Image (cartoon, rainbow, N blue to C red; front, side):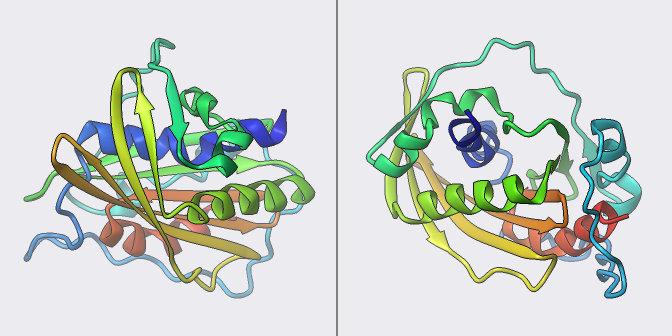
Length: 230
């Protein structure tokens, strides 16, 4: 079902980033090695209304040229063998099907994804996901997931046998696209905190989701939206 799969939007990407341990202590880039300046959205650009194919979305993902020096695209090593992901203490997410989050995909017909490591002085990641479907599915589905997550300030995600405490905070949405949502999540596991920001922007029939180090998300989100709009 659409709404059950939608819960994977946040949990699959964010748990993967937190478990990898690559978004630690990354509220700002290291001095002297800041990422390339993000491009400004084009005000005159009209959002795409017809759904785009996965191939078309792939061409609109950020790449190393957009991000600047110090970024390396990670190879997709997903072999289909995922640990079970279970949500505890957030009835809204459980109702949406948070236990299916390990699937990592929204129930939209077309998608493209990329994850980059930023290695100049810190171990940080930024991930981008593009989805495309009709507007009446993208907007309501994304809104439901973000409202469910930010409506639970504290809950727990169990990945396999490993519990991870999650604290959420709703953030002001950026003035980009037709609709936007943003949140800050703190994952605590093994006595270590990992802070990840996630922002989603709907521009017509394209949904842009950028997750990772808060500073990297803020830097690259405008360019991601601009490029996704074509």
